[in-house]
Amino acid sequence: MTAPVPRELLNVLVDVNPAGVTATFDLGGPFDLDVPADWFTYGLEVVAADTGQLRHFGVRFSATEAKAFESATQANYDASHVTDRGTSIVARFPDTSLHVDAVRSLKGFGTIEGEVVSAEVPALR
Image (cartoon, rainbow, N blue to C red):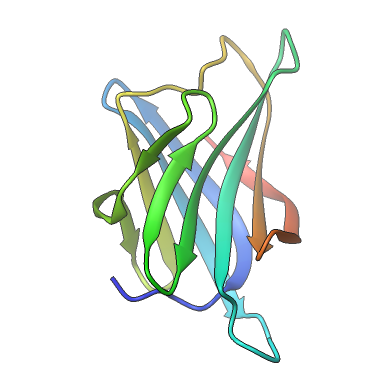
């Protein structure tokens, strides 16, 4: 997979089933950058209703790799778990869950080289 260019994150669709979690990051237009980004991330923030505990699921792109990750288990998944569909990126997190009993909020985010460029993006489950 060749690394896509960073684009505006419009929304995140989340599917949770016995096989794991799948996040589809729907994308808008590319960001106008003076120089190409070395790396960028699209992510999903999950906040537990009872404890306020925070979890992240995401996908990171660089010139040399694409990978999915999740913070609860600190798992990293190789590029075979990431699909670029042009107008969206699909990341699959097998054998995992949202790691919360009840969800207070789901929000998407995007970063370019660690700088937040999209925050509190609507996420639907």
